[in-house]
Image (tube, rainbow, N blue to C red):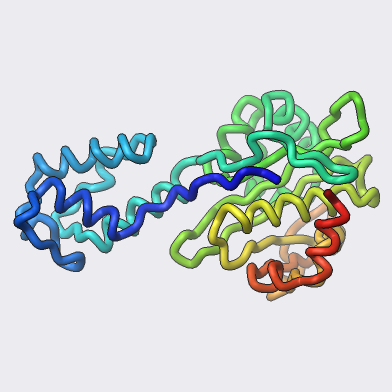
Amino acid sequence: MLERQPLRVVSEAAIKGIVLNLLGSAHTVAVDQPLESQGFDSLRMFEFHITLEELLSVPLPELLLADRELTIQNLTQRINDFLWSGVHIDFGPKRPLSGRMAELAPVVDNDWNALYQLLLADDALVSWRLEGHLPSGEELAMVIRSDTHLDAAFRIRRDPSGRFGGYISVFRANLYDKIAQLSIVLHPRLRGSGIAGEAALLFIDHAFAIFPWRKLCFEATDDTLALYSSVQDVAEIEATLKSHRYVRGRYVDVHLGAIHREHWLASERVRNLLARCR
């Protein structure tokens, strides 16, 4: 089993504690009132900014806290929105996560090159994520990881060459609503092998274990919906967009699906499949 990684979430109580420490123990602070009106001047805000960066080990934009109406409540929300939506924080596997056929591992430089070749081959599954624009090979990792919060490459476990088999990720996280997007890219030679299904099982279970997602959303065409067949018992199609995307010379439907945490954790089939994977 992978070790659980610490959640990068800032609580309102933690923010209030830092503010009180800077103001002094004699002060009281209302979480819904502007900090400036409670004696929190620009020098203390500067100290707060530095203190928070040191605690998080993440540089914060200078203008993130620039607001005279800033309260502890909206400050907490603003910091969390930035942490979860503005930067890539790697909570992926620190060591390979293996099943019977698939092995998930941290993404390395050569994997980006392999992924780029898949995209050049007009793989329909991820075209929606890039919104019709394919960046250059040099830009691909930067563009994708700018909004990615958990990702991994997967390979065939028994393949001694360690060839790239696909890429799976959680991205565009919304901490307030506790939702994020899920995507899978599979090498054509592996389609129908069951390897992507096992990789998806391992990855989704890991994602729910280390993040408090309420649901993971995905988009799929009729052709790519099969990639989610391993989790069909817990995956719901919530809407279908008719003739929504142009793929290989024709307009196709796009299905909007979701995997809910409570269904995932309660599914006996998922538990049985995971036990057989390991």
